[in-house]
Length: 472
Image (tube, rainbow, N blue to C red):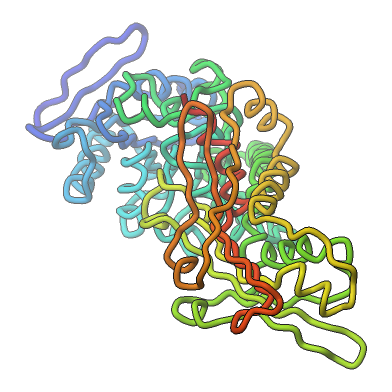
């Protein structure tokens, strides 16, 4: 380790410590007293340490804590790795001690790829807490060893807001029993911010392509992020009881405010699966039974391949009622669980339903025109729009590309339907969606009165409305 070299930056004294590889820049506290903490920054992919200098100063100004900052940088190819990170954190801690820090309240703070690596490293480390900016803990927060603040941008086009839904749902499903998760592992969705507003440097080409236009200026975003970081750090490390209470109250407000934007996602996600049943399949079957949907019950079963391929819907008569049994198969994008930039909603939902003709014949109603699978996609779009927040609806209306529904692809055999996926494509007009249908006559020799559909999930429609439609 080379000797400390003082560098003056305005009124701020900075020390740079480093080796031939990873370096550490120390920014001394601006408070002369108070509980001592340190923020050890781990940069995002292709980001340099100095890109976090400006936001680090804002964090210091927002807090009454005696806050040190260590900016790590110089990673190989500007990509943080688990091979380099332990040495980088140890080097930062040594530099902090050499610069005069006495306490051991070290907080790792990682952006994007840096946060992913930090979340894996910090499970067994000397860090006392971590803050993830546009990033997440790979294997979930429920049993994480130390406190974690997760900051997600509402308009993050790189790490999608949908990536945080499961953790938010698992941790804050019922905080009425205990508020500890709000203070220990808060997940905050920052209104109107995008992926690159957690730093101040140049935007990498991938973010230029994939990130979304923010509603807040960088200055507004940095100020807001600083308040969130301060509340978490104060609630976790302050020795002043009144400051802790105030910070905890702010954390409660932060999570509650975030829940307004997570709720539509939770609602649409809930339509795809519940207790091994697909609620959207039940809604779709009810639509096919209109205007007599209250005349029968529906049971749906989510099946995996090849059981789904072998399944067929059926009528089951009770003493005074009839039940329609139908099935669904839900398909996701490859790597959706591992990659935060991949759509988290189902790629498609395959439904095996009873046709309207079959239902009306079974219940002795007058026949009516058979609906289309396209109509189910329009229902999905409407459900998504109705669930969206006012701000999301306004964005979609003012700068989003619409969903364009095409007429169904009509197949003539079960083999053709099984082998033909839902068609989607994007162009300047928007997202085109084309269902695949198989409709059989009620007097067919084998499959009688079936209506099979490959359709868009309401969750996928909402993900398009709030994220993908906003890209140029």
